[in-house]
Image (tube, rainbow, N blue to C red; front, side, top):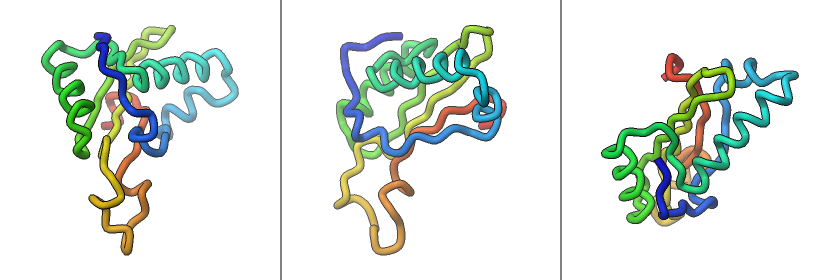
Length: 117
């Protein structure tokens, strides 16, 4: 599901891949490009194969920028499903305890297979 609401790319935090996704795309440029294209869709506000109510939740998180979670679901070229989840979307440094944690601890985007959740 595509939205006209575009996330702030800086608010997506650090990008990470699960171990299985890393192994899946290792030494395979086609798979790597496929996954990268899905990350770009997520970053542009295209939530993929998400139910309308879940897409609306994503839109509310993007509008409020209050540290919420954004979740996208996509099919890869070989029909495998991946999830892309951003946690802590829109948190500001003022919302973080940077004496004990880093910004990366608060906001990150992870690409994973559903069975890894």
